[in-house]
Image 1 (cartoon, rainbow, N blue to C red):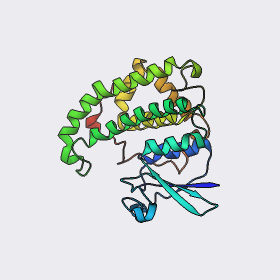
Image 2: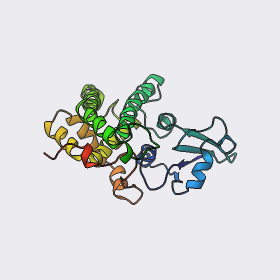
Image 3: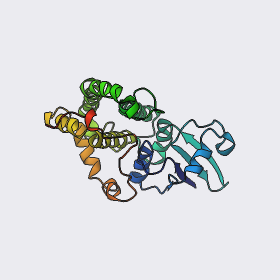
Image 4: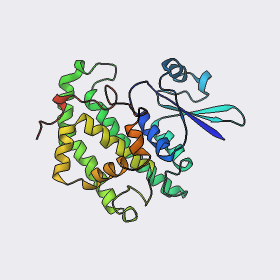
Length: 250
C-alpha cells in the first residue's frame, strides 16, 4: 500500500492546488504538509533527504511504500500529475497514447499557468511586484489582448471537437488531470482578472471553457472541497488580483 504526502508552501493554494484537486476528486487520502516550512526546505536541494535527483522547487510529492517503510519523492507539477493520473483513475485509459494526450493537454494548461505568474513577476521572482510594476502593466496588456485569448481559443476548440466528451471534457468521456488543471486555472483567473473574465464570458466565444469550469465546480466531491477549509484562499501566490492589471469594469 502506498501513502502520499504533499510538501508545499503554507497558506497559498499556488501550484500545490493542482495536486490537491486530483486527490480530492479521486477521494484518495493524502497528507498535506504545507504548514511545515522547515520540512519543506529540507526537501528542496537536499538529496540526503529525498534521494536523487535533487528537487529544485516545490511542490514535492512523497510516495511512501508502507510495506518497506521507504519513500520516493517527485517534483515538477507535470511529472507529479503524470505519475498520479493512472493511479487515481484520472486518465482516459491505460493505453500509453491516451495517457500522452492527457499529459500533452495538461502541459499546455500549465504553460498558461506559468504565463499568469509572469504577468505580475515579468522580470524576476526575487523582486517584489512593486519593483517591476510598470513592466507588469505592459505584460498584462499583452496577456489580456493576445496570450489569454490564444490559450482559451485553443482549449475551446479542443473541448468542442471532443465528440466523446460532448464538449464537457478535454479528452475522452471521463474526468482527467487536464480537466481539473484547467478548472483551477480558470478559477484562479476569475480571482485575478474578474473584469477580463467577465468580458470573455459575455462574448460567449469560450462557452465550453467556462462550461467546464462550472461543471467541475458543481461536481462532487470538488463542490464540497472548494467550500471547505481545506481549500486555501487566493492571496499573494500564483493568482493575484492587482486592479491595475485587469481591464476596466464593463
